[in-house]
Image (cartoon, rainbow, N blue to C red; front, side, top):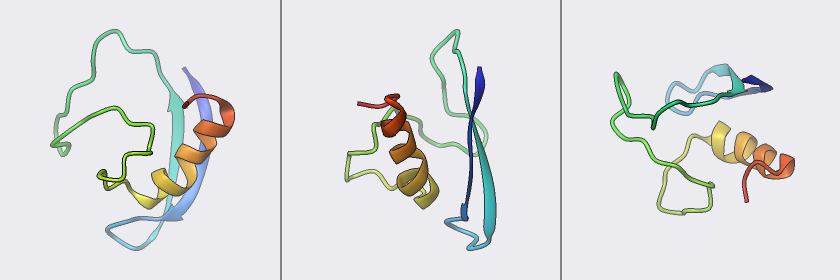
Length: 71
């Protein structure tokens, strides 16, 4: 597990500045939605039917592709 990046962007729903700190993690089982998460799925961000938060779509996914973490 390790630090990846800090992303400063505008929160999608609240419209206020936010700081998203991103880490890598090792999983010992498949993740499952809980609490405020209604659904969970893997994506490379290229599926146009998904509605991703702008900070994820515009900042995180391009960074992960650049690092070679996403195909």
